Image 1 (cartoon, rainbow, N blue to C red):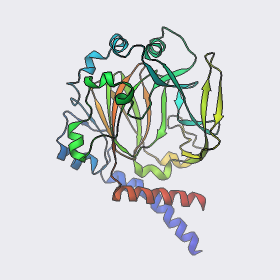
Image 2: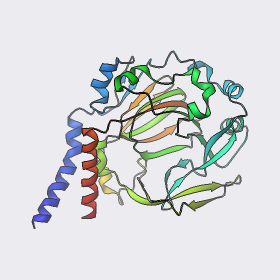
Image 3: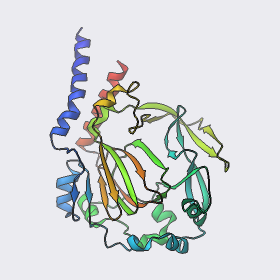
Image 4: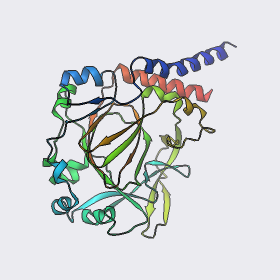
Length: 317
């Protein structure tokens, strides 16, 4: 009896936590700033309370906004061989057929990739430059001079440089499944649009995680593919739910979650705080650069870990 009462109390706390967090200041939409903030203002108003915002006029001085046309990229990067994620369905790093399936990482000339994006060459598969190991500085150093190696006011606010600067370019069919990162993320759109669906960390009790066998796509040019298990790898915890079409019969708790949706347009920057869940779509040929700054593993992180552990414990019981 006492154990049942304790379980009910924990469930009540988990249900109340997201509501209380929203009442403490998270809005119904992502706010806009019409200028980049000072380091102190940014840390105090956005990083410390872990709140997202869209910042306008923060990258308007970047040459990339005018220079990064297809013709320019062909001229500067051209035949250089780069890493491209290839999938049969547009979902890289996502749950499919009861596996956590990663894309085929194909090495190909950048100009061949552009031919596919521009539909000069047809393919049944989906191609996306999305390698997240600071690929802008590692694979596309020719382009760094058109942006910045870091965001100065963010670096000053956090007292550190970014761990990674990533370059993103792909087809509209390429989708990023719902997940979270342990980074303070500044996501800058150069051309096109990115569509984000966001959940605050406090929605964790409503977001399902399950363990999956990791696997990788092996994709053929005719559109056929096989999924090859990474047999020696540990199982991966991942979110099986599609927030755009949630299976509420299987995951009824998700009906209590309150997602935010926003569109980040060319010339705009999204501040995506650490541990926020996000699902991302894009316009065709969208180009973006993002900066990952390592989060502080402070009391906020401890609170999230407690929430995560309580959520898992309730599911087991």
